[in-house]
Length: 190
Image 1 (tube, rainbow, N blue to C red):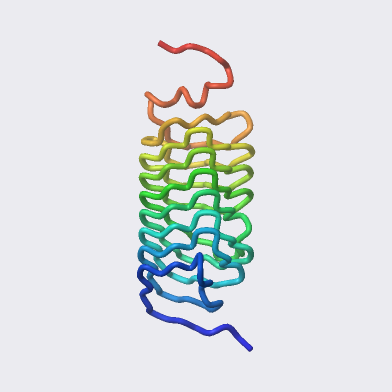
Image 2 (cartoon, rainbow, N blue to C red):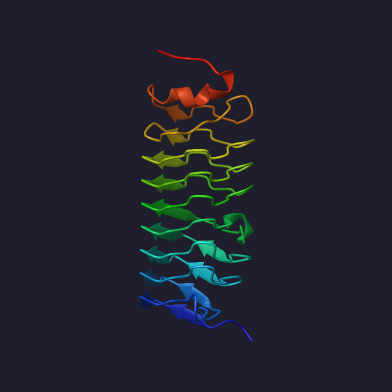
């Protein structure tokens, strides 16, 4: 039996940590001030949905479909996005806390991250071509064999990445924060 199809619904103030969100295909739905803390969202499809002021920290996203999803002012601590179904994966983040999350090996071309906290986020082997890191704190974020070509770091801060093991062709960096490209050399710039 196919999963139910839920269209154009708004869910407000629900606690899906206690009562699991029904397995379904959610399209053009909005989730406001909902808690998904440690929730099992595996094998659920979200298409063109918005999550606003939600807590999805440590949610299980195994084989979850996330197509054209907008996260605004959400707490997404420790989310393992790499476990999602990567077919048609498309995400936008604004004013979110993504600390300790992982995007390992995902294709996230053109993904905007705006005003986000991203401490210790794992971007190992991720394709972030033309991604935007606007006013993002990337303290201890891990970039290893990451594709960052044409990405915009011009307002990002606290990043440290090695140009020798990442692809950074035509990426944008600000003069004042370019030190993040030189950290491995243990040099002082005055």
